[in-house]
Image 1 (cartoon, helix red, strand yellow):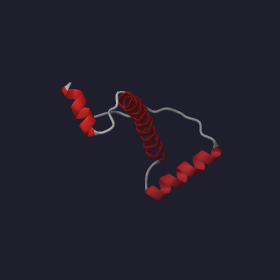
Image 2 (cartoon, helix red, strand yellow):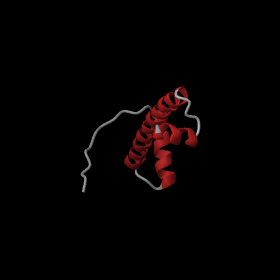
Image 3 (cartoon, rainbow, N blue to C red):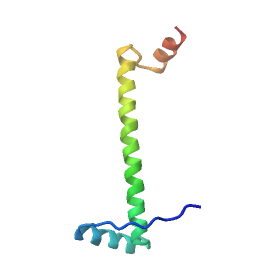
Image 4 (spheres, one colour):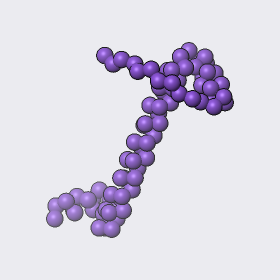
Length: 78
């Protein structure tokens, strides 16, 4: 079981209003809304990293003429 660590953060007034409105609408605490936003941000960063790696390896495959699963199977049998 994890324990929470309390931190003090500063937010501009417009973000506070948005976060408080969202918390009320979703029946969450302000802390819960901030936690969800940070988790979503982490997911988005990992997705961007994955897409970057995917693009890199797709370019490498194209450079070797691997354009389909059949091409990949032929390449791997070599």
